[in-house]
Image (cartoon, rainbow, N blue to C red; front, side, top):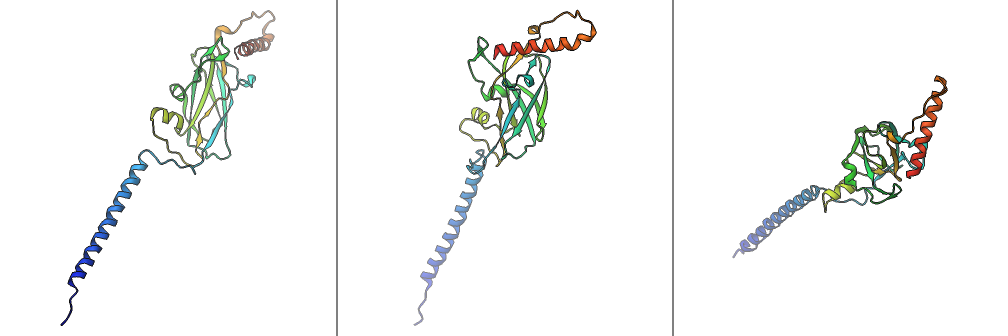
Length: 220
């Protein structure tokens, strides 16, 4: 009598179908999970080491290159760390620094404060300087912040609690002025009459600059 294996064969087919179905379901769940993670907005990568931006001027320790007057021009310069990948574009922001008696900062500006006041946007990433035409600002102490490719993790976390901003390896993180610098008002410049004729124009310029520097030293 010939023995049949219908029962075991059906059981084997059922197990095969179930296994294939489970694998497909698992793959779908994995894909969905990866997609959700990627839009969360990202999975923080400890191996993606960032670069850095260093603001060189204006700097309170370099008065000759940091003298600023409302309505005047100020040269902003910066550099990148050796690990930085040159970004596509830069944005420069300013923030006012409240002080007590014009000397002691009472509160450090938050990243949100900087983002309220853009000096310039879309500056080429390979640039190392920008001439700032100082507008009608309140005389006092200021800080600058330079952001590359709109990547500012501190600002992003402040406005998106619980989320981390994605960045690539070598992405330059924002640079903020190490020390506050002073911007003087025009009314704080002393005017002198010219009693020595046209040839003394250079002397008047030097006197005016010296007075501006003296005022800046007083408020630092």
